[in-house]
Image (cartoon, rainbow, N blue to C red; front, side, top):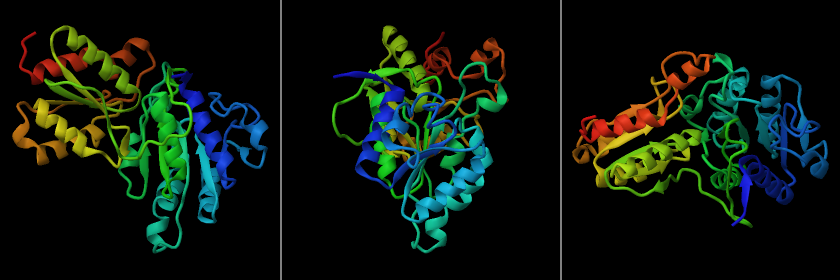
Amino acid sequence: MRTIEFREALREAMNEEMRKDERIFLMGEEVAEYNGAYKVSKGMLAEFGAKRVIDTPIAELGFAGIAVGAAMNGLRPIVEFMTFNFSLVAIDQVINSAAKMMSMSGGQFTVPIVFRGPTGSAGMLSSQHSQSFDNWYANCPGLKVIVPSNPSDAKGLLKSAIRDNDPVIFMESEQMYGDKGEVPEGEYLIPVGVADIKKQGNDVTIVSFGKIMKVALAAALELEKEGISAEVIDLRTVRPIDYNTVIESVKKTNRLVILEEAWPLGSIATEVAFKVQKDAFDYLDAPVRRITTADVPLPYAPTLIEASLPNAARVIKAVKEVMYIKF
C-alpha cells in the first residue's frame, strides 16, 4: 500500500469529491494563489479555477457567513480556517446559523458545509494560537465533529464529511500535516461516528483521538514492555461519540484511561467517563482516570509546554494507578 502525507490525504479527498460534484468549492485564507497555508490545497486552483478555489480576506465571520448562505442555497462549501483559534471570530455563523438552520426552518433548509483546519498546540505559538476547541464544538447540537489521527482516516472521514448533509467540523493539526501513513488506492469512505480499535489489549482501555493518539500509542508500546496489555481506541469523531466501542472494551479490561488535548472542565474525557460509569459501572475495577491539558493558557516556553500537555509518562502513570501497581 502506498504511503502519503496527511496533507496529501486531505487534498486527495477534496479533489476526488470536487471532480464528482460541481457544487463543492473550497474557500479560505491563502487556499488558492498560495496553495494553502500548510499546502493542503496545493494545485487545486490550477485544476478547479478561481470560482471553486477562492481566496478570502482575513474576515472569518464574513466568509463563514457567505459559505452558510451558499450551503442553504444548494452548494456544498468547504471552509478552511487557517487555525480553529481564528474560528472564534466566526463562531456566531457556525453555531447560530449553520448548526441551527435545519431545526429553525423545520427541515426546509439543510446546511451541507465542512469547516476544516488545524486545532490545538503546534509548538511555541503561545496561548492565543494553541487552543483545542474539539469539545466546544462537540457541545453544540446540529454539528458533527471529526478529529482524525492519521492520513488514512483523514481521507476517508473527510470524504464522508463532504457528502454529509449536516454541517461538519473537521479538525486537523499543524503538527500532523507532514505525518506519513498508508492510504488505500481508490475510493473508500469511513463512516462518521464509528471509533477504531488501534491496538487490542486485555488489561486496560486507553481512549483518545486526534494527534494525542500518538501519545496513547507510544504509552501502550512502553507498557507492553512491562507486560501490561493496553487496548487503544481512537474515537475519530467526538460528535457523535461511539460509546459502545468504549464500553465493550471496558467490559473486557475493567479499567479506563482517557486522554485529550483540551482543558479539563467540560472535556470529551469527562463525557466518556460519565457514560462509562453510567452504563458499565459494574465492570470497573478502578476509578476512571483522565489526562488533559493543564488548566491554564498554554505557555510559550518549551519546558512549560511539555509540562502542560498530555505525554506518555503521564499515561503510563495513570495506567499503573488504575491497575494498583506500585511504582
